[in-house]
Amino acid sequence: MEAPWQQAVGEVWAMGDYPSLAPHLAAPATLLADRLGDGHGRRALDLGTGTGSAGLALAQRGWVVHGVDLCEPLLDVGRRAAEEKGLVIGWHHAPMEEVPLEDATVDATVSSFGTMFALDPAAVLTEIRRCTREGGALLFTAVPRTGVVGDLAAAMAEYLPVPPESAPDPFDWADDLTVADWLADGFEGVTSTRHVATWTFETPSLGLERLFAASPLHCAAEHVVPDRAEELRRELVRVLETWAQGTAVPVEFTLTSATRS
Ligand SMILES: C[S@@+](CC[C@H](N)C(=O)[O-])C[C@H]1O[C@@H](n2cnc3c(N)ncnc32)[C@H](O)[C@@H]1O
Image (tube, rainbow, N blue to C red):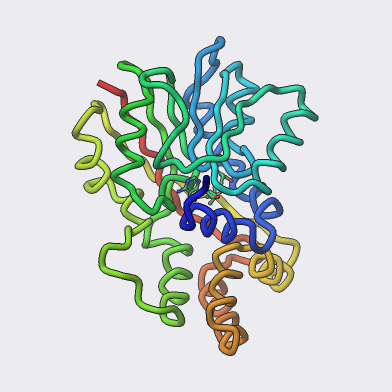
């Protein structure tokens, strides 16, 4: 039986049209898979797999992949893509705070912009430690507060109710000191590197329109403040325009890697 918060997370990520945005995050997911290399039948866990960007890339490299996500419609998109490519992936409709796998049964745990949205980071870290076998790899991407996504989030926060003090900060997952502290227990060789992905659109206005119609978190925000939705959209367009270089928006992200000790 799904808890109300789990249902709410699934409903938020089903808003808008995330599958149309996912290809813009394909390059970081491929980077994760390239870093891990060929799987030769080893087991990988993809947390917050969504439509399976990282999981599919790993399955194509010979990993036996288990993807975990709370949003069933996104998992369905991944299931169809896997079928079309003839890939077998275990798709689990479950929270990353309670991974439905046995202890020490995965050789690599990855997350492409998934763990940063966890409501309970400590529980997710416990699950990563529990599921990843000794010597196994951990690799995840996250966006920093200093990039375009951080600026969009800050602009959006002006319109939304103040979150409780206990609410996690998603940008912590891209902060190398915080992450090193979190992973000191159970991991070694922690490194974080900075990268840039590029969102490219046919024209700036088409890009903005697509982004705002498709982004689940933006749609959820408009839902919370329907009478200020237009104003919010104008403000976010202004922020995006400060980052756009012609039809391209550079999106900074971090890649953290570590080995389970
Ligand atoms: C930004 S999307 C990333 C999706 C995918 N990894 C990609 O690279 O396109 C974040 C994903 O995390 C999922 N998610 C958020 N909180 C979750 C939780 N507590 N447990 C499981 N999945 C969660 C969402 O449903 C969504 O699919």
